Image (cartoon, rainbow, N blue to C red; front, side):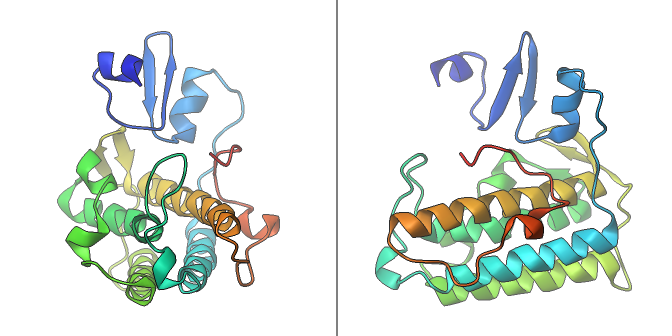
Length: 210
C-alpha cells in the first residue's frame, strides 16, 4: 500500500507495469499495456440488457437473504460491511448512467456510501434500490431516450465511451455478486438460486475472485 501512496495512488485495484498504471479492472487498457493480441469484446446492447437483468435480479434476491443482524458483518479483505457492499453492487451502474448526464465519472462516484445515499437502511431498501437501478439501466439502453453509447466521457480511468463505462459497470456488478456468494458462505447462508458459470458468460470479469 505504501508503494501506491508514494505514487499518489489511493485507488484499488490498480495494475502497475514499468511506468504504466491501469486503474480498476479495465480489460481494454490491460490488453494494451501487456500487448495482448486478443481483442477485448464489449457486450452488445441486447446482451448487456440481458446480463444486467440476470446479475442485478440475482443480487437483489441474495441481498434479501441477509439477516438484519449480519448486515454490518465486515468482509475480511476490505473491512467493508455487507450493507455497504450490496449497495455498491447496484450503485456502480447507477453512477455510470449519471456519468452520461454530467459527462464525467470520478473516484468519488465509485466510493459513495450507502448511509449518505439511502441512510442506515436494511436489506429490503437496498434490494429495492437495485430494482430501481435495473429499471433505469433497461430504459437507458433500450428506452425512447437511449444513451448514445459512443459518447466520450471523462473518468478516473481516462477517456471512456458511455458503452465502455456501462460494460465495465456490468462486469463490476457481476464480479461483486460472485464475491457476495463467497461472503454468504462465510456467514453460513446458502444463496438462493445462485448464478452459474453459464450465466456469467459474455461478461468481462477478473479470473481471480479477490
